[in-house]
Image (tube, rainbow, N blue to C red; front, side, top):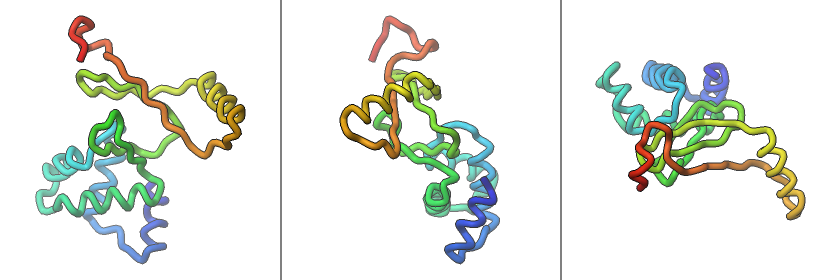
Length: 141
């Protein structure tokens, strides 16, 4: 993914600065959903001289390059994740845990539904909400 980001920067006549390199490395190393604020806090621990605006602008560049995806999962603040093979999300309404899954049968059914309604799908996102197996079952929010 780093070469994709480098190509994107070159096309825009931008440089891979040490700050952008650190943000990219930390982000790709997380392998989970993260808000820009969470990422900024992690970056601050490694290099306190990097500002919040630099992190936000770098994440925008990563999304533009196709290295990262952004989404407001469950109506929360924007989260970022590395751009990987398509998947959907289970979101805990209590603790906010996000679990990824992929189901070929669901993918086929969505395609059938789109065709039946005269749509040609270009993308989709599925989010299922409930309680994860860590949260107490009796105290639903």
